[in-house]
Amino acid sequence: MYPEAFPKPANKGAIFFGEPGTGKTLLALAIIGEAKKRKNQDIHFVKIDSQEFERSSFGETERLWRNSFKELVDKQPAILFIDELDAIAPQRREGSNYVGKNGVVAQLLTLIDGLEKQNARVVIIATTNRPDMIDNAIKRSGRLGNLVEIKKPDEKGCLDILNHYLKDKNVDEDFNREEFARNLYNLSCTGADINAVVDAARDKMYEAYGIYEKMENGTFEKSDLNGLDYTAEDFKLALEDVKNSK
Image (tube, rainbow, N blue to C red):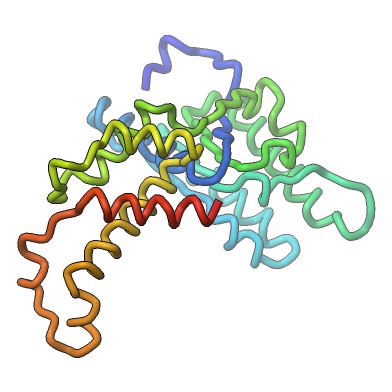
């Protein structure tokens, strides 16, 4: 966003790491959106699909990487987003079984170094659940040396996330959100877990109001959802489901 203030950045990007469901991908996409909004200009965005690269034949993956980086440089300023970096750039190993993967990692290292030589306005944001699985050369300073841990939410964070998912929903006044958020925190819930709890509470509410029964016998209408309220009991039962799954 402000290249004049950072003429020679130490790293070409960052790696967000943390447990599944903590919001690594969501945060990366939010940063991309924020950069576009603040500068009021088109910041080119490329997302790498690890599964597409996994399906590619020998040599094809390296070509895909080269094409992606050329696109980034041609359309800079640009952001490259790589989800599940550990699947794309694992630790290199000896042996014929690892020649293909080793070649991909070597190609990626060369392309990242090339960004610095071209003084390209390209930033890389990668995510992983397993930073220990990523090749050390990728993680060193000068490449993607900025490792940022995305932790599970604290108690206030649990409340904020809960309120986010309940913002457009009717909830009984007897439901104590602060106490429920404390329970979520004590269970070490992630943002994804909290989303799942709210979905489970909806299921409990539908069961209590006979919505699923109407769906089964073919009498359900959209108007049947009018006036439905989430109750404290709905959330209590949903939380029990989460406890049983952990």
